[in-house]
Image (cartoon, rainbow, N blue to C red; front, side):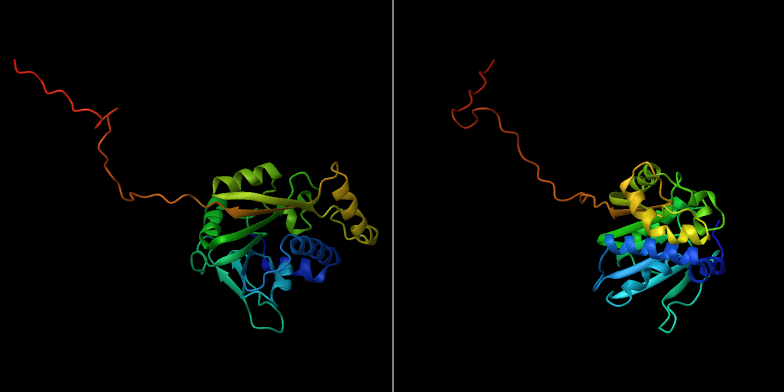
Length: 247
């Protein structure tokens, strides 16, 4: 079940923990996708907090928000690019998106399979998908005080398997948000230190998985042009074939 857009906005824009989470996830996205000059960038769910860096250079930025969640105007002080849409019927042309971010969309969807099929439809040749979901092994999926504590959390294996069944090939992944989902000042101050320590120590589990995938391109199929060739017998043409003797 999708969360309410007001709750999402309050967390990311009006709480210290939400702003810290926004900063960490956005920094990792920029590391994996450093630029989008001339590209069409789309976010589904509630990807607003991490799409802002692409507004300057991207050819087009669209923020899709599912009906059960609700929509808010964004970005502030600029022409609105957010759109309210059906969960599995996006108002986008087939094959016209270059970069697609799913954040707070997949784990709360009741139609995950159809959602990924719709993502595959809108992505064009060479398009990339970034799926951001709560990590099943992390602390953030266990706290309902944050948006990552709602819906279905995933392990990296579960997410990669799900993407593979819907025509995607995983290319790279990352785990972020190693700090506890706490509003206490001590943990907020330790956020940067814990991010560095978490990536260096594999025994620690980050709260959020970020998986980049590409749409699998299949070889063209179809009837094509068929050529029927006469079978060639061994030594054919080297010597005349003996004629059958009359009985």
